[in-house]
Image 1: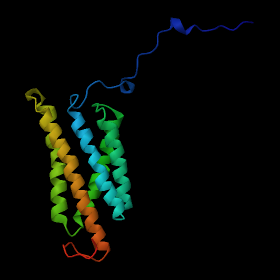
Image 2: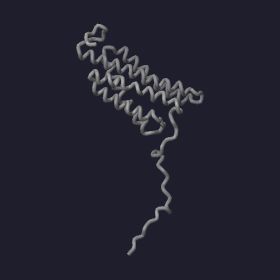
Image 3: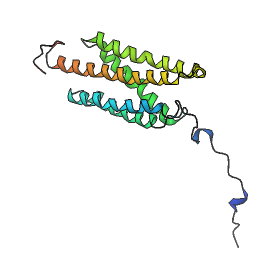
Length: 178
């Protein structure tokens, strides 16, 4: 008895699942999103300081955030897994650092820097999505660059402060641990 062999060529393939297809719309135009990609390379500075100042959890979080940011900003599609994963990491890591800033002795510096950086995010979204017809995309990308810069500087202050506090030194210029 011979088995029936199914000829798969005569059956059409199913249409692709929409979420599995590559999204075609970029969050910023070609060339503009490269600014943010380049600014992401400032993250190793505060990652290195985190490990230097014995804050290994923050350093590990920084490596994760650096990896997800590079993965997303090399080609930033609006509806991609890389974007949602990067945002998920940001929504966990940045509040943790903000929490650390609340209990540091130099909280006025760190909270100010991080708050300005955090506030830049909704402003950049409003400019990018609602004012696109006025061509403010470069302004939105520049604000997103400021997010990365200000939060990174705030993290550096946090790590430095916690290191000085654990070594019995206050936040002053005459600290013997330099």
